[in-house]
Length: 130
Image (cartoon, rainbow, N blue to C red; front, side):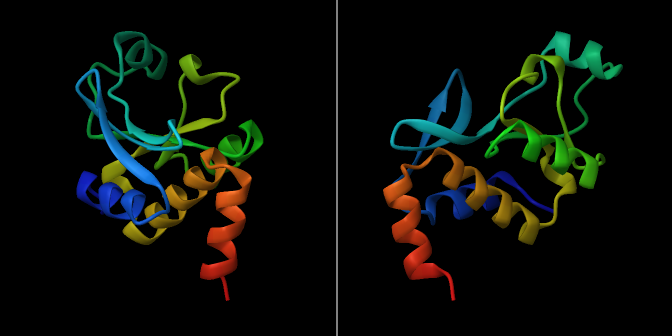
């Protein structure tokens, strides 16, 4: 399954993406907008999920809109989830150690496209889609 090194590889392989550390957590941005980031669960998250402790690494990924987030959760709730903190936001949480590398690659690219300027996304797609 996927690791933070995989996230780094996929994120930094996208145009104008950069890696940062914010409050001790990794995040990847395009044009100053975060598209994927390390998101440890907070006490309120744990309580909402009905668990005592975080079981593994959690990635937050921007989605095109909240409908996409909900579709991902419906697709595979063992991998994708949310907490009340993210209600109303186009961001899905991901159990990083449960997502296949290939699916992570797609998710990171989709998150990048949701955050990147339209011009950059069009340019990327023009050169990278058959």
